[in-house]
Image 1: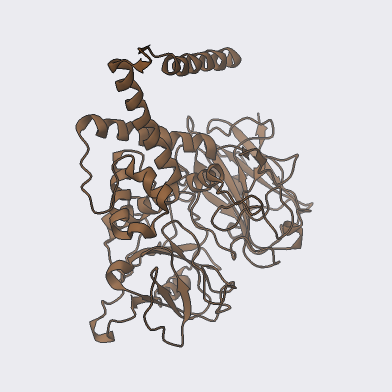
Image 2 (image 1 turned 180 degrees about the vertical axis):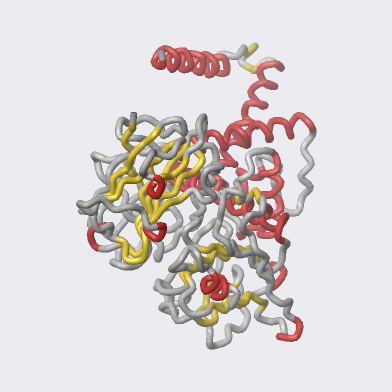
Length: 498
């Protein structure tokens, strides 16, 4: 039945392509009807491709506008998920096992920005393409904290906008951004889920302010509690995505992209400083194109192989990873931090789509191959039989003894529809990990039970799913040990349970 359906769909697609290729011409010219159809198709395709190309920006903009709509805007506004991040915050693959704080600064208005970090804070300073910002000296990119230039001791960090030629005072770690707009992404770790106060207090020591603004004129820091608050911080999948890009283009100008990239945006009416007011017909095309492009990104982002490259960590398991422990052992990876193929010099757009459909933010610290640093990420879309994970089925995942995580480990579930945390009535947080003290078997293994109903006798090891809603999982090992990095420790797949 499935094969017949796929065959029928393929035939319909071929017929549609043929109708474009065989549209009537007269006197070697397209008829008026053909020209109108092809030009409309061109506009739709240009918008679709522009959306997919700009997906990292759309991802960041969704977070920025979604956050600022609820918590306010300004360099001094730093929302903190003080009671952990639950599914009321719609954002791609959040982690409820650390405390998050995220903010957005327009250096086109403020000029250079100072970021003061206390010791033991972990964070990344990124531009709006979500490229980790390089630090003077060339050794560090984006990281703040243990993997950053401060080595976890904290300090003052100075972020400079593109082309900055003013005085650079001493006493700062200097980061040079590729965009005027700055994305600050912070994490704080806690030891006890029942006592988050130390981690919150650590976050609230952060200061963000313009370099050239006297202390008496700086706005006081505000740390709204983002936990339990409805906020849509997902990439937009309608016409508003293009409106957000237009805002960013006006803020950045030629900082945003090269001539080809700016040309892609210009082809759909997005030009710096010029009005973006499409007529109703064009607006409808752009609205549909954003919807289709987002769905295309989901089709790319829920696969185990992208651009001809397997993302499988182990060939006999369904865990995937695009970054630090994909099917590319060793420290040297084929892509750099801007998704450029090191060997051939092209930007791997499809792999970038895969990442920014499901995730946001990366840095050298996150993908560190040094034992005890960074994190190991195993993403699971399919069960042991290769079938997509679905909410109405029950599964068991067995973790081998002595999970190699020096800090902690967790399994978190996400909505297949949009990669936000899986919302269920049974559990507030869609994660289960070592700090939840699951039951350990006599042989040292740990069985995780994942499904719509709690299995009798296994309540402490159960993660709830939602019937009729597909999901995927991410296994995280924080401070991964040597057996995680060399891949000798191998978790079990999602096994169906009758």
